[in-house]
Amino acid sequence: MKVAVAAKGSVAIKETQEEEHAASGVAELAKAAAIALALALFIRTFMFQPFKIPSESMVQTLMVGDHLLVNKMVYLLWPPERGDIIVFRPPHEPDKDFVKRVIGLPGETISMRGDTIYINGKAIEEPYAIYERPHGRGSLPGFEAIKVPEGKLFMMGDNRNNSQDSRAWGVLDIGSIHGKAFIIHWSWNGNGLGVRFDRVGKLL
Image 1: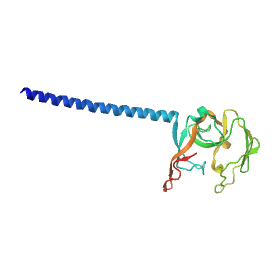
Image 2 (image 1 turned 180 degrees about the vertical axis):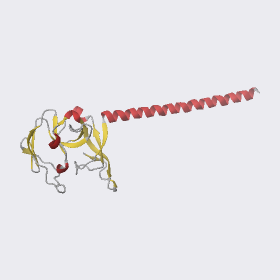
Image 3 (image 1 turned 180 degrees about the horizontal axis):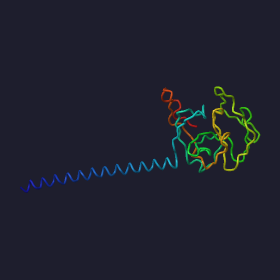
Image 4 (image 1 turned 45 degrees about the vertical axis):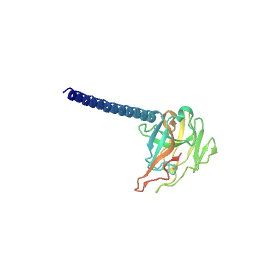
């Protein structure tokens, strides 16, 4: 009889240990998931953030369906430079995200005649810019000299005749920048052709 009681006691102890082990495993998984979530939120908030290209304003550099990663810390260390592709919130639609290229820097005078941009009176080379004429439309008009104020940037899309940019809504406050786009991490052709593998991993 004593043997039977001891056996039952051993089984009970074993079951309790297994339950405690299972509970410990669940707790560890929950802890790991919480840490991973906190890390992901920290990275997204302060370091890197994904964005999707919805329009043709940056063709050929960026295509509709490209997914970008944006470095949110780079401008904490260095100022924006001409040619940077940045994601920001424009002054006329502060609830939306835009992506354009930095063309005019603080203190510079920028103008446009024909298909040429002039900075402080000197023409600049822009191998990324295209000036395709949309169906039924001519070129967008140029503009006279504009002095970019301190703390501001003059932004333009690479697809010059299909871009709503600083020519339409004015200069951009540097404080409205999300960060600098640096890589295409995914690209999907919405016309049914699937993944653009040749664009995945492309540095900007």
